[in-house]
Image (tube, rainbow, N blue to C red; front, side):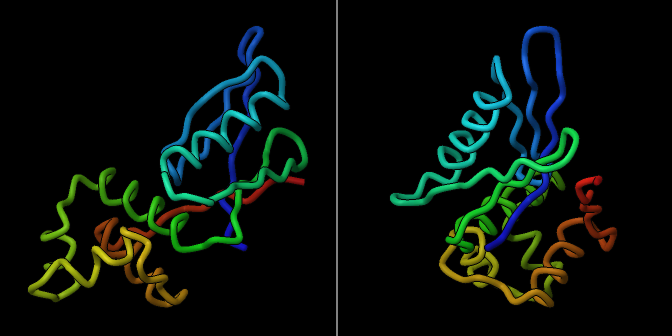
Length: 139
């Protein structure tokens, strides 16, 4: 199962929820509602029939969202990272040393799941060699 870390933030009468690596920001009146809203947001953005997300509450205000179906979740992550970098599929392909964007596009379409080493390379390419900082839940 692939999981991404999220954070709850109390804001007045609401619980704001964020999963920055997926570009998810929402809120709920209670923690339970906030968790339901973040799961719904991920499922709606992924937009794949049968795709389900689980929320794993953690210590403090941290939690994780994950799915047994890895390809669509990796696809959402890569799409968000590319959009954050302001890159087109052609530009990503060029950075990967490929003339065709199709090989990379298959990852964003969820048709292929990259190995961990390939995912690391893709993240580096999308972020101009800077990588991504993944915040771990605090205990």
